[in-house]
Amino acid sequence: MKIVNLESQNVKRLKAVSISPQGNSVVIGGDNAQGKSSVLDSIFMALGGKSAQGQRPVRDGEEKATIKCDLGELMVTRTISPDGKTTVKVKNAEGATFSSPQAMLDALSSKLTFDPLAFASEKPGAQLETLKSLVGLDFSDLDAERKRLYERRTEINRAGKEKAARLDGMKQHLDAPTEPVSVSGLMTELSGAESQNASNDRKRKEAEERVERIATLKEEIEVLTKKLADVEQEHEGSAEALSSLVDIDTQAIRDKIAQADTINANVRENAAYAEEKSTLEELRVESKALTDAINNIDKQKADAMAAAEFPVDGLSFDESGVIYNGVPFSQGSSAERLLVSLHMGIAMNPELKVLLIRDGSLLDPQSLAMVAKAAEEADAQVWIERVSKGEECSVIIEDGQIIKERQ
Image (cartoon, rainbow, N blue to C red; front, side, top):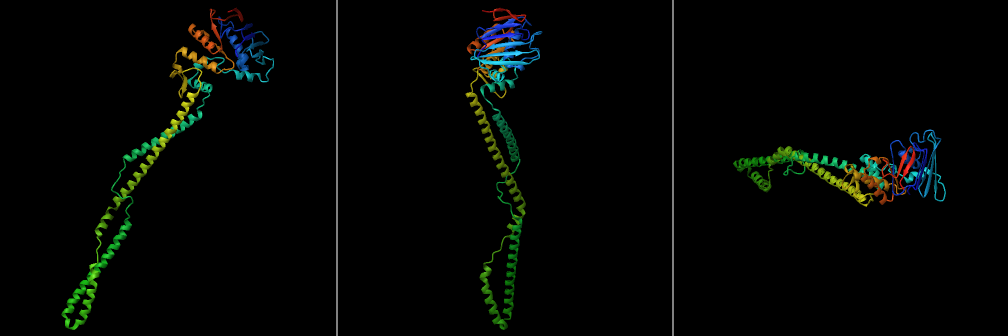
């Protein structure tokens, strides 16, 4: 829909005007303080409602202001009293009215309807939100999850670096056993060995005593021949047992006891090294998993961006803001920013293709031509306020009335 006819009476500086636009670009010209802005304000107030009225919406000395905006399919009629009270009626082509007319009008327009060039002057964050809303992309959940993963990965990587640094400063003893040496066990083993050796010593001493006794008995052979025979027989029977006796080397045990503290220290250091190394590996695995998750989120966003329909070729965005042809929107040329802003306004108003440009005096002839071409290509209608009485003006306003209208 576009404006087929606009009738405005007693709106701000206007007395009474009736404009039936020809073409897609409507330039409202005239000197300052003559009522140009009031023409665009009439459209704004007709569609935007009470919030669009501002102070003193009615011309001084008049009882009411009336705006009729013929959109072809709809007729919008708004009446405003000096105290700001307003009524609005919306009829369709068949004459039927709507029970919630303002809600219907709100659904037809957006903030860029009433000032598309405002997009170019918005802060990058606001531009980004406007563009994402237009193309239907909301990355808030993905961005929050990505931030959480990124922060967790930062923590993991920091912990990994600390672990790696500690590992570099730790000792590892490759020749140490895996378990600590039991000193108490060695002491028990030593006690048993000494007990057995003492027993062996006693047995050797007994053997020596038997030898001495044999010598004594031989001297008394005549008296003790029978007794000597018995003792010799006993000694011969014990010879095999004596030959099987094996002494335990207690020095090896003593050496182990002496080395136990060093060995156990090495075992503990090896255990600590192994634990740190295992933790480092776990941190590296988790860091990689977090990186993969972050990359997956980035891919989801890239895929969504690739599938989104942007109003202008080359328009996109990243975390920093709106991007046009690969550079930040704010760094684009004036012509590029103007073109993007117009197409944004048109795209955000698919039903009501009406845009208002209030700073038309800032547009040079080339920019005016660009606006007209963009409006024609999009089959939109752009109303431009301009301090001028030149040939580019569709209507010239003076003292609240039309004094010249281009045919």
